[in-house]
Amino acid sequence: MNEFISYLKKYCSAISPLDFLLTTLFTGLLILINYSLGLEKAIRSILSLLLGYIVFVLFFLSVYSTAWMLQYRRAAWLPAAGKKQFILLVIAAALLFSGKMMLWPSPAWIQRAFSFPWDQYWARILQAPVKLLGMVFFLWMIWKFLYPGQTFFGCSLTGFKAAPYFKMLLLVIPLILWASGRPDFLHSYPKYQAVAFINGSAHPAWPWRLLYELSYGMDFISIELFFRGFLVLGFIRFAGMKAILPMAAFYCTIHFGKPLAECISSYFGGLILGVIVYHTRSIYGGLIVHLGLAWMMEIGGYAGHLLCN
Image 1 (cartoon, rainbow, N blue to C red):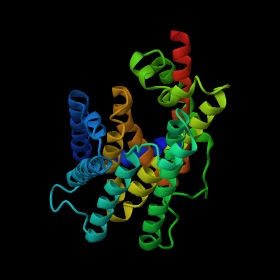
Image 2: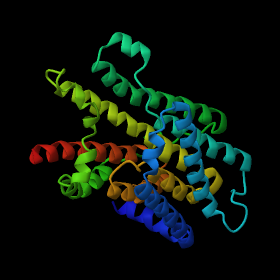
Image 3: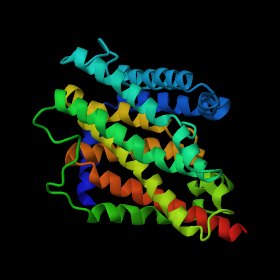
């Protein structure tokens, strides 16, 4: 833990206070707009998959590029070196993650193989692993051509120590216990509620719940690989520590459908994980924290509903 604190102190001493202030105010404005006007809900309500994808691309691209502009406001908004490659990677980031945000309907082959409600269940269960494979494939292509000789976006166990990250998880247990009794938290958790329609058809239900939670966990592998691996470690060649703030702003926007407190904390949590990854060059610690936190929130959601009922 002392090591993590030293990382944060180094970051605070190196980062421009104005950079931090402007990016935080910008992110706060986005949060205000979303929770006042329902921005994320409006995008998700678009029935056309293609149109929804395009809108997500434009939204993420505007957020991420604006956050970068705030880092380079005194001159051209681009880093000094590798401008063309930098622009292509910023665009690629918006294109890639927008695909992950889309929820596709039940494919025809699932509908032929399963009747309702199992066709809907398997359509949801398979999305996370398929999207993870897609994320890994496209990031591997980027890494193969643009980052030869480097570790694949933080997938390194060299010198990695897991214990400090489990200690970090212990610190958030009281917060989860508090949140587990709040209506807005229980409205969102456990995420299994999204497939609770199979409860009457699944006997017993627990194996299908477990399978859902494993699929849900895969989602966080792609998130850590993308945000901390690609957006931090992939961009430090252009801007060093400046890559962390734009990542945190982008990361916050993917929580717009979550409870407000979780969305706000995601900005600072993403910032902290970004700093740690910057120094350790490994995404595994963040993965432990993210997966652990996600599954603890699921447990808190199950417990909260049991107590309320």
